[in-house]
Length: 431
Image (cartoon, rainbow, N blue to C red; front, side, top):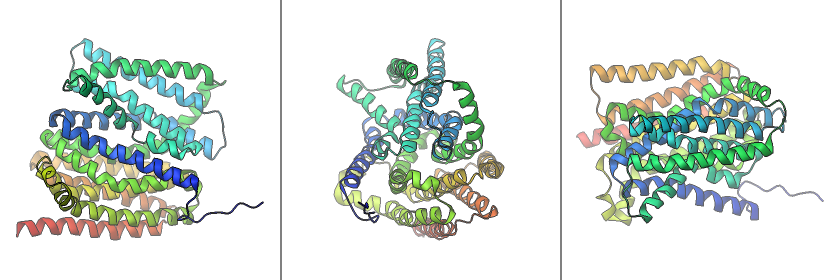
């Protein structure tokens, strides 16, 4: 009996379950940081955001190298023996992070650095779960694993709330260290059950395959977390409001996650024209959602809960349209990055993207050293840096005769519209 292929808009029990899981998970992941920001001191929340960002960047620079090769070997090379590699790499990386956090505590080092090292194993666990669920097509599980580090922090803070004790950097480190130790113990038990021969040879092969892809992927990670790290270095007092604006703008990222989670394997294996088509329509919808978030959040909150406006720093709504532009191009770069990995052009993309990364960071901090920038101008600089990443990734594919015309068109038109709207709002406020 032939199976009936459903249209994208048609529902069956499996799709209904996925949508329920997805929106439940993304709602929890989206709201958790905002709830945390409302309940704890802004300084502590800013440090948490920096810890999440630094942990994500460390993960992007380390474990995603072999993980990218493992994804390629499993989906394209049909190599089934990857579970023990994933667990071993996660265990080793988590042990190193735990050791660093303990050393910082023992030698009375900065609590902020100790928190980064202590929270890192849970960011690494998020990377492990996301990779495993994506390559196996477990879309319901992947909906939750994408934000595991944030959700786990929410659970940890519930512990403080139950004890009626306000969290501090030191107390958070003291909780995360034993939790990380327990996590490593679980890894070791799993590894004992999953181990296959030639482990180190396979890991070496994964690193060789994954290095070019992870190098490009690390730049995508920088786009996601670099804004908070940059803001922390230029104006630490602006980290919390910028992070709140960023978290609100991430609502548009949920549409990208919906598509990539639902059909990741199909997207990864798709050829150029199909991949371009599959991504272009969601990207256009993301542009519309980004505009609505940037200009509709404050009126909506004022309409639904006017008292809540007083609890949100006014600078959040000033930054929001510009931060939304940054997120829009970050999503576009993420789409093109997946296409770069699939088409084997990561090595060609590496040096241009490195040049954009170093050039943008150098220009931003160099200009700020000569002419100190306001918080809003820093937001604009980060957004334009994000647009440069998108342009270089698109050109890299086009130069290899793999043009993604629809994605490029949406990025160009959407970016101009969002940027002009945000700039027009600033000009209107001045006059």
